[in-house]
Amino acid sequence: MSATIRCPYCNAGQAVGDFDDYAPFYVNCEECSRRYIVEPVRHGVVVYRDGEAPCCSDPECRATEMAGSGQE
Image 1 (cartoon, rainbow, N blue to C red):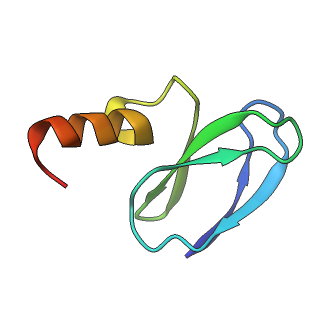
Image 2 (cartoon, rainbow, N blue to C red):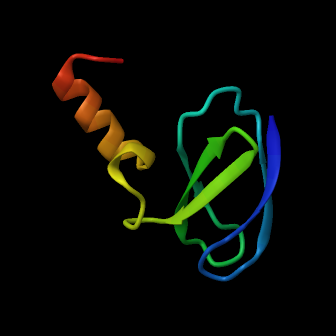
């Protein structure tokens, strides 16, 4: 699956692809170099600014929470 997304900071368009699951991931904007989060959902993607996503949508927070619970 792939998608064209807009940076939540500078609104620059960027293509992201090669994701086959629904795990959120970080993207570095090619234009402004800021990091943001992309979460694949059923009908597209949701984009969050870094630090504004709920824990289940933040890759670092999600990894910490899942490691603490013994789930993967």
